[in-house]
Amino acid sequence: MLKELIISMRPQQWYKNLVLFAGIVFSLNLLNFQKWLDVIFAFIIFCMLSGGEYIINDILDIEKDRKHPKKKTRPIATGKLKVLYAAIFAIILIFVGLYGAYLINELFFTVSMAYVLLTLSYSIFLKNIIIVDLLVISLGFVLRAVAGCLAVNVFISPWLIICAFLLALFLALCKRRHELTLLGEEARNHRKILGEYSAKMLDQMINITTGALIMSYSLYTFLADNIWMMMTIPLVIYGLFRYLFLVYVKNIGGEPEMLFKDKGMLINMFLWVVLVIIILYGTH
Image (cartoon, rainbow, N blue to C red; front, side, top):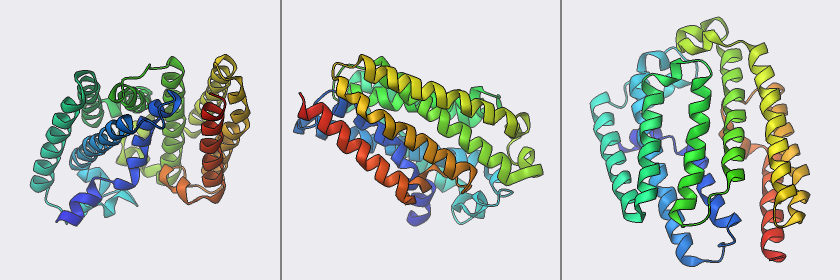
């Protein structure tokens, strides 16, 4: 049962919580050992919170998941993991995570609680409201980024907030389009909200969000204290275009974690991280 519980926590999606580390990097505290301990603890807490939320979401969507070509293999959908045990574990996981958040500091606890309430509201009813479902997913990423800054007590840059929001929105739109394409006529039966979207509409929204994200990141580098950050713009553009290539040509947009198996994306992300660190710390 422990194996099924861990699978239901979707550890392959915990990479989303890596955004918590943005604050410590961009605040020039990369070599601060104490802050690293705080942000790693914060990362573990958000993995617990998101894991608990994933289990609750699977419980609520159990019947719909059984009709999905991929989600039907999840432990709760297959019946390998009993709903009662899963629910008890999820509740314990969330409460322990929130207690750990309180131990870091009160502001971090407040944001963690807001994240739990937001994702729970999404699982219950917000995911059934067109456009709002996408905005809620994006706000979840913003809360992660803000929580990472609060965990190490550093300034919360508005650029971090807007870029995190737009990046999450970009990923959510691509995922919706993939689901719509994958499920076809059965899309509405699996998730009612998918019947409200169309591939053409999502394509337009993806185009707008991509442009807005590139412009926002570019403006951040233009106005940053370190003008050399402008050198990272081509890598960001390549990353977005590479993702679109994978979504439209390779058809893997429904599982963003698959990006870590794409050599082009991995090399690009590695180069971006290295370049950012060299620019921020090498010229500081």
